[in-house]
Image (cartoon, rainbow, N blue to C red; front, side, top):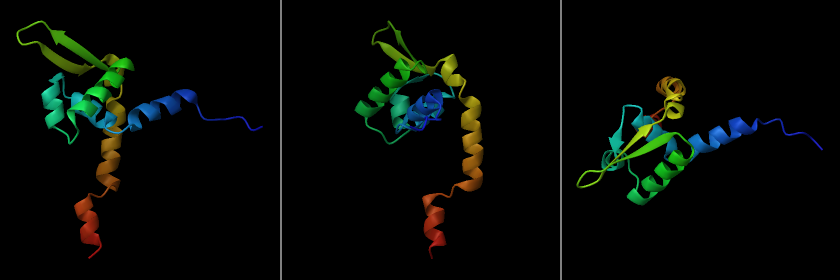
Length: 112
């Protein structure tokens, strides 16, 4: 039987980051702490799904959920040190995307 050479930690990292919306949520929080409504209005995602993804990222130790005991209660989300450690990865992905990824509009124009 052939031994699996895939690194389990790398596999887990890719699973976390490739889950739909996770990378965009993390990228959104790179600019600092934000309320749920701010994150939700920045991307086309339902509130239910955003809430689910934020809970998963909190469970993974990437996102911190902070509740402020005010009236009404204020909840803010931010990246933990583990989340901010992805900053260079996201910068590299952005640079790669700027150079190599075409927008849908560009693709449609190329088809003409």
